[in-house]
Image (cartoon, rainbow, N blue to C red; front, side, top):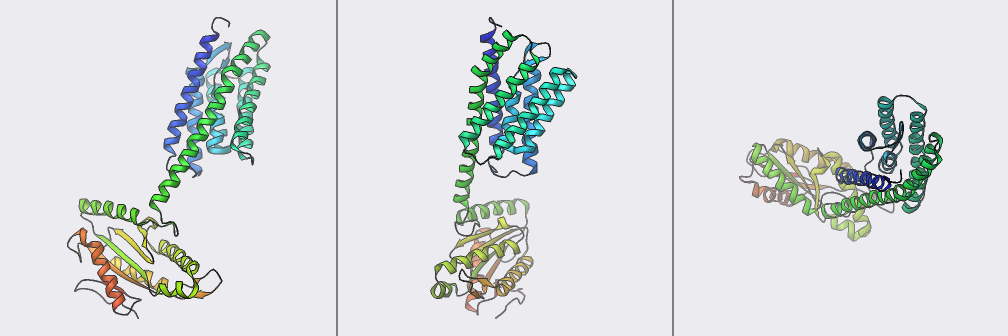
Length: 374
């Protein structure tokens, strides 16, 4: 092994580069959902890590003695535990172990390798769940993984001189590679979380969590292009709480904030899709409705008006108050000639609802049905 020692180091560094590429790809896949560990993302993480570990074993492993192989497939299991938890780590270990058995058959070496991977999956899962800082988790995961691997080699390799060389390789390349990979994995995860937070800040209203004005403009422009392309109707509702200023003046701004938050949840519940709902500013909200005619938009507006009228708004001090809302509706092409006038037409309907007594749904058009309430 003396003459090939530099070659082995080079090959193991290649393993590290392959695993790093996997981390980058995984980071891009989960870029928009860095904290959403549902069953699908866990399964995908485990499956991908399992396939990657199998590829390392089949195409890039270094033969040591008979069926004894040297590769970094165990780091794939470690990374699966970091990204996807227990289910992902055990799934990846199971895939790699199944491939090992299918290709090399049952033997003492194979059984040892299988047991070692499952042990690494279990240990890394426990460490990932522990209430420790990121650095301590990385240290424990890497030292534990390397220790299990070294014990496995000690169990199956009789040539102690060769074993010593393997240990040197693992400590010289494997341990630093493990720390590098865990650092990269943690860096990508934290970067994705920061990206996700910044994206939310730029598109979400800070108080209610609804779309903000910027996101409303993007949503409206996208919906307009889609409606023009497909020749579908595009409707809009503008909702404004009646006499909201009295809430702030009487109970204070914290009470007003509580009312706005409760209104936002109510609008999300009543709308077709919460992504359609935006807070345009102050007590004004909007809902953009693609493929919705004027009659359907007015019916939804009436449903919302009634829900707000019947809602008991609970203030921070426990006081319960009642509110109403005025709503303006517009639809292209039914009561506005161009999409550019959609917001203006809905705003005119809102103004008409305010002017004629509030707690009403109003929209322009001679064929307008009665949906007005005082």
